[in-house]
Amino acid sequence: MGKVLKIGTRDSQLAVWQATFVQVALANHNIQAELVLIKSEGDIDLVTPLYAMNVQGVFTRTLDAALLSKRIDIAVHSMKDVPTQLAQGIQQAAVLKRASYKDIFVYKDATIIERLQLQAETLSNALGDDVTIATSSIRRKAQWLNRYPNTTIENLRGNVNTRLRKVEESHWHGAVFAAAGVERINVRPANSIELNWMLPAPAQGAIMVVCRQGDDEAKEICSVLNDASTALCTKLERDFLKALMGGCSTPISALAELTESNLRFRGSILSLDGRQKVAVEKQYNLPDGLDGYVNSGLSIDGIGIDCANEVLSNGGANIAETIRNAAQ
Image (cartoon, rainbow, N blue to C red; front, side, top):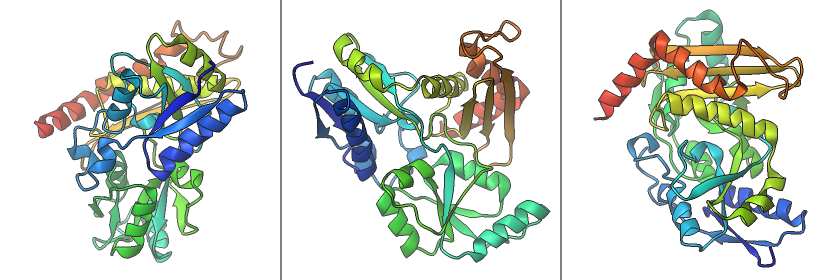
């Protein structure tokens, strides 16, 4: 491509970091690119909880419009923010190698960590009913309440730096963040721990690059950035999400982990209050790697959908229906 490739991105520090990362990666392949900063709907309204907004594409719609109007050539997104059904005229161009998929808890006083660990180990109500944490994620809220049911949870919106500042200034005991977000811009506080028990949002920690359908040149250029393992795992996770008809307003989690000889898939759906949970965990052997994978006639592409169907048949359908009815 002789011209300079225009990369569309939200204007938050994290989004600009991600777009710059793509820009540098393209430069390493002798492709010139420049950033075009665009404010999304999700960045303008910083008060309404995400689950109370029409969240499908709230962080991507403005960039989709810029792509379709040819203001930009590609757009860079946190993959977990991208709807499972891309907008008409938009196609996936690349998925970059995944960073950490984990969630972390940023706390104000270390004594809260001791109380959390005690409750988890003894199954007692060691927290009491005086603990307050913050998150804007309905998934994080439901998983937290499933483990610590008496916690008060408040809404936390804004970019990463704003949310970290709010934690410092608030009466909260702490808040939940995506590890990748704070680590990418080097602002992860020392007073934080990984929540190894919390299952992530589908595609959390991954970056997706999209372009216009029919723009074969842009897609070909971006293909050099694609990480096949991350692309496969995030596809399975997003298939699971799509089959459960979920979005940011539904507490759905999924994680696919791939090694040379094994694929592990975990997924779940919870009720909004965290009291009900249906989970699935599957292990698939890959004795000959991905190319030679055969397991009871199930193709690797069908794993996410297969696991979603198991969740639905085991009670997940009732949870999903209750959530949909509550939203009407």
